[in-house]
Image (cartoon, rainbow, N blue to C red):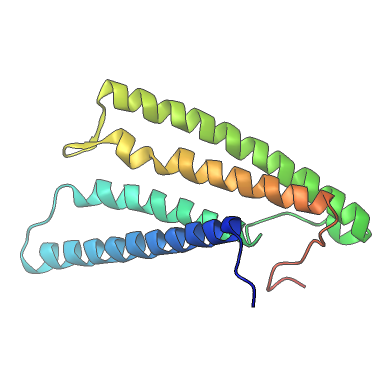
Length: 170
């Protein structure tokens, strides 16, 4: 068995980190929500910062889930046209749609990064004394990585790597 190259090891490390962060945030979100329910119903009290933190955690879980979906090309896609095309046409449509998605995601990442920088400079608070920029960092990171993954998928399609149908699709 040959040892994976440094790029493959780096990609695997990034994927494990994404999965670990997703599990950690989702687990913390569940624990916080259950704790809040118990505190309100049993002790007639609550945590004032739990609702805004849960909203931020929901954003993080959603974007980390989107990262996981794009990793294996399992994201939501409208592909009615590509099913009617031959393999070469399907690969071209796949490359075009993924290139467009990459451009949109990278544009969102750019503007999200500008927002994070502006909020950090302004000292904006999200809740309690938590800075807004800290809560928003997932936006440029996730959209940037999603954009890169779409671009790589488009490049693979153009190089002739077969477009595989995601699991669960006919």
